[in-house]
Image (cartoon, rainbow, N blue to C red; front, side, top):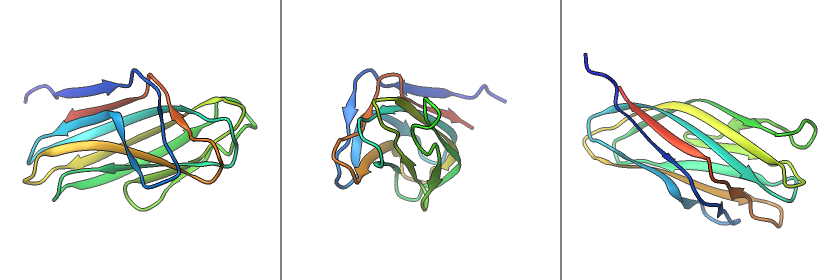
Length: 148
């Protein structure tokens, strides 16, 4: 049995997400090989100045790809500044209610991907709903794939 192949990308710049259709993250994207299975992990650091904003995350994958998100959690940096809860909505989408006061919060997700006959990319997309200030995904956020 060969050793698992791990690929990852770590964000190095800020990226803000507006109140519109989900937009591609400029850095958190990795290639997927055809007819391959992967475990994935994502850690997103973000900040925002307003409370009551929902930060939505989704992914695009190649056609004929099965995507299973098995766990997701939102973490406020400081107790009492946000709900700290997140519920996957459909698959694969996560919603987290953001805290306020420019705290740095994080979202973590794990799951599995089974790619069919079409190679392509695992592309993270984000957007906000509600509120007036765009959340910012921060450097140090990451996406990691382990080929199974």
